[in-house]
Length: 275
Image (tube, rainbow, N blue to C red; front, side, top):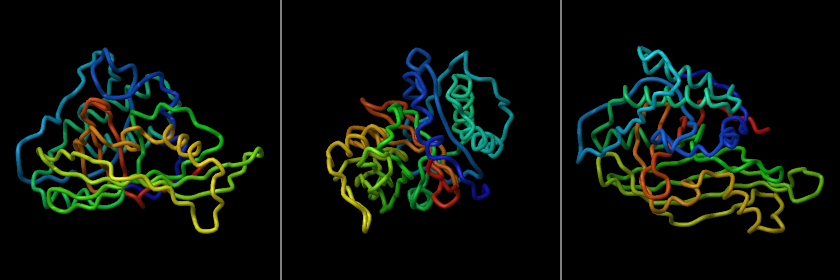
């Protein structure tokens, strides 16, 4: 378990906007750059259901060279140290890709539904996505992006919640704040694969906060700032390719977001400081 730390929300959530077209850990022809993850002890058990094909690995000769003898704990520590220092260059993305691939290769999947649900349930803070390509906008600040999983057997609910501040004036000061919730349901139908359906979006200004004068324009900015697979989770499924007490790596599969990785850390283990 890592010590309590403060990282910049911009560094952790929007650094990939500097990337030139990277959107997934895919094949060498599809992937110009890539991104990544972090932390400690893997949870494993016995098989429950058909095995999903979630162990695909890109085989790129130009991937950053890392010590393949690293333990999962060491690879996670290296990633947690690397992410807040990233400046957006290709070498950093290749290093992150290599660390994530190493973690996934060393992972022994959780293979009983009860144990999987116990390990997945709770609130997970997004640290990194390979699908954040929008440029930051000075009118909107995301303070936090959390995925909450409430498991119930082979199904459950999943809520992506963004905490936002919005500037509705020419001075650039934030005069409204609140949450934007993307409520979904899911079913597990193959191995640990979660098939997700969008139920609804909810925009909730905080108590005492002003309401944006142009709500559709503000939601459009949220759509640009939040990873597309989290804003509109329809038509894709999510495989858990690494999971322990603190860290979860999810690989998206489907026509729109094939190969995208989202990296989450258990909420409360890191403190993200807005900029």
